[in-house]
Length: 629
Image (cartoon, rainbow, N blue to C red; front, side):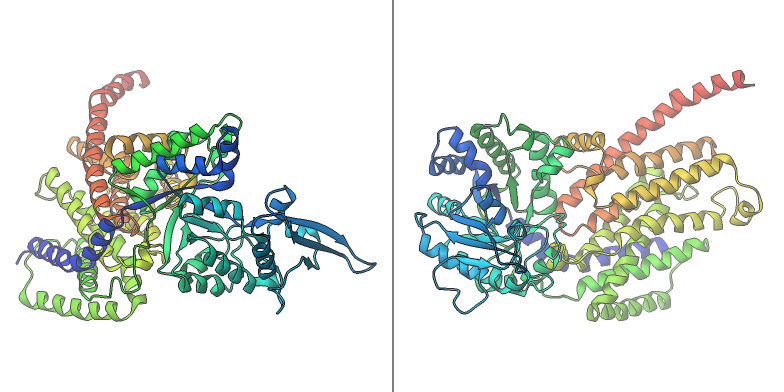
């Protein structure tokens, strides 16, 4: 059997073994198509009043436009100081040396006054008489109550209940000695109102590092925790892990980000759509933009909600309140994905060793094939039994797949034509990505409770491996020894610096959407509108264009000294392909469509680049050369 035949038979075997791990994920992604649009009660209330609408009329209209839930927050000391809510907070000046205190009481004329008085004591009294009536006195100054939760916003809770809207509740921070009270208050609120999900507000999760109180309420009441994307809240990850699998991913854009990045209504709508389509987010928070608060009307917000709902429906989503995608028994461990990854890791390691030693031709004997099969079985058992070994194997398999795919495309000494090498390299990257996705298609990775450790390594290691391969096999005109013996050229230093800076930027920006410049964000939005599944920039504008330009230069015998830069660009493009499959929260069909779009658009951009070089740059350089002489 030839080595080429053995390679593709093993890759087909890996795909077949990966399917049992991918099918449950595929079914779960297909069934999880319900999305909820949520808005903040306190943001809508002034707009409704300015429009002359009652709260019930306003929520009824928004519900008809596509609103699926209402966000209601626990009232804090700052809210009470601003006159919001049914409680009164006063500063008490005690005797000499005793400091200050804070008095809190419920207005007797408030609706539910008796219940609120009881809830106030549940929230703020750490003693056996918590259920008794009367005001509460705390031995702290009033300024310490600014971000501390006091009582639920019953006005918002009642409005949501009357409108038939599920409630997304935001309990506030708590005082250090009242951690248990925060869970008790949440439990009491959930008993009285139809709370469908909750997520703590503020900078710190109440009780952190001990989040067991809130997590116990989640499991007792079958109450999901809203897992906020890109959250910086201290303890949010711990609460998500403790509440698993009762999690609903949520995307919300803060007012600070809206202002800092000048995000328009259209851009915000596309961003929320992207969260639902690309990252399986099922709770989308819509607020009136702070940029337009002086001119925004209730009808503007209603139109925004309607436009977002129509866009989501056009993409195959159903408006409503979602349920957590994964049950406790979902995705029982199966051995076949471990077999796929074991075969992939051994195959890629063998191919890299063969390429480093220029031994890519010749037959594979029965003894070698049998040894490979036995090694695959042993390694698969190890990966299946020890999750740490599986994580390590996945982290190193990804860059090895990238290296093999890149060297397949860059094999200009081989017999296959360029188009065939491109197809084969793309196939290697996709098969490798599917094998990785199969093993890690489990709820803990799909919900981002655990992170895949190979993403950064996939950007860093393949360029180094390809560089070593090229120097070792004299693909570059000089060997490593020759390079070390002579002084560096200024052009090499400049290109090396550009490569290092570019690689550092990519490593820094990986999964970091806040550091994308405005022009790139606009280009991404254009590609999303055009192609639905936007191809990744490193593939469209770097990997495939570098490959076609390099093929042109090799054929013409040009720029041999600087081709290595283009080869590294090709490697980074295939790194992007494999990394797409390592985003386990992204639907697998979307990833496949994205990579196909990246292939054809990247080749199109590459063809245009070659045309510019062939018909514009080279004639211009030939014209300028006599002038320089």
